[in-house]
Image (cartoon, rainbow, N blue to C red; front, side, top):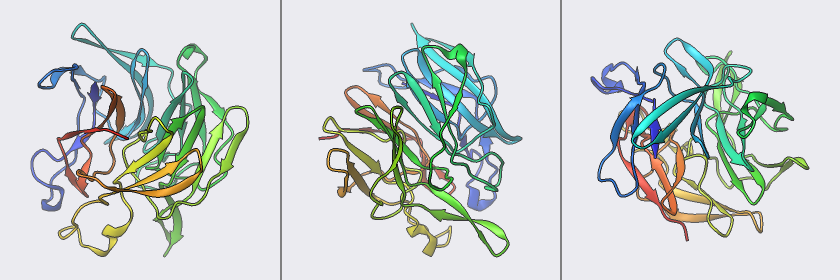
Length: 296
């Protein structure tokens, strides 16, 4: 497993005036290892990009640093204890807070924000064939629904899913967040189609979302908007429930409570299950924990 980049508040918490710090550090965890190994650095500190697991390693896509949003793409690969970082074709535009998933060896990227400060969000989609990276990113038909960021994606049985997230709307002369319940599916052959509405909104849950062997997509924790009624000081943390989409019946159901509710974090396949890495415990509070996920 490879973990690269990110942000935290190393000196003091955000609510006490702590400054956000970007990191370029790369860590690896070998199967059966008792601890992570610090294995190298990215070309520069950055975070809030998408990650995609391909055969060659971890693809780090876009994101931002303290100067602004970026279109850089890097492949981080690990072999025999050594980490190599290789530039990959950049995105056509700078994007952060996107989501990505891999389908049939192709990396699909959706949504995100082009500028800092949540001034915009897009419904554009890009695709990179990881087997032919020299062809670069191709823009495909945009998502017919709202532009969004911090949404969830998954790939199951030849289909891509884009679920929930955050949109922006005009409110009192500025852009304001709006949690989304839209759900969409995409196939290269037939394009986009609308799915039944989510029973409640979810954003920033672990993504790509884990999928069971029976084709159930799990949205684990994330932000359901319930924290709005609290102040930053009293916020108890993120949604501790799981919401599931059964892709066979295209129905939503409750998946029960989870032990470690987090938001804004990646997920990857690991040792026959999945792993959710770090993320936010509550706004401004980072977690150093890694949790294994076993699905029935």
